[in-house]
Amino acid sequence: MQQFAFLYRPTQLLDEDALARRSVAIREWVLPLREQGVVLCVCVFDDAAAAVPPPDGHVLPDTGLAGVTIVQADDLHAAQALARQFPGREFGAHVEVRPLARFLLPGNS
Image (cartoon, rainbow, N blue to C red; front, side, top):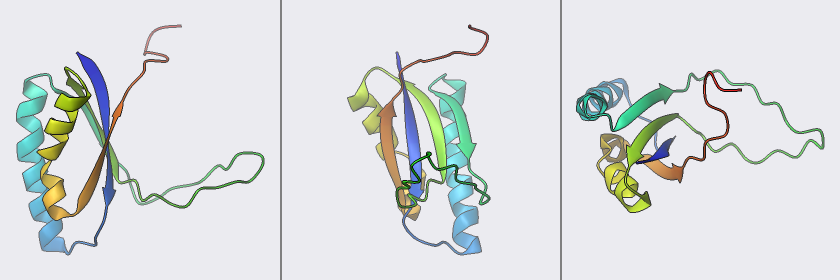
C-alpha cells in the first residue's frame, strides 16, 4: 500500500451550525477508516500561523491550508476515490491528493 496526504483547503466560510455538522460528518467518516487501517493520521491546523520565508524573501500567496489526513491506498486512483468520499467536500472543502515519498521516518537515522 502507498501513503497519500489529503490536503484540505476551505472554499467558503461556515457558520457555527455548519461547522458542528461538518465535524460530526467527518468524524463518522474517519473513525471506521482508522479502524480499518486506511486513515493513519488526521491533523487540523490552528488559526495561528507564522511564515518563515526563504532568504530571498519570495513568498507565494496564502493557500488557506486547513488540515491534512494521511491515508493508505493501493494507488493514486484509489486515493482519489477515497478523497471524493470526504464529507467535508459537502461543506466547501477542496481536497488535494498527494502521494508521499518517505524521507525520514521516526526512529530512523
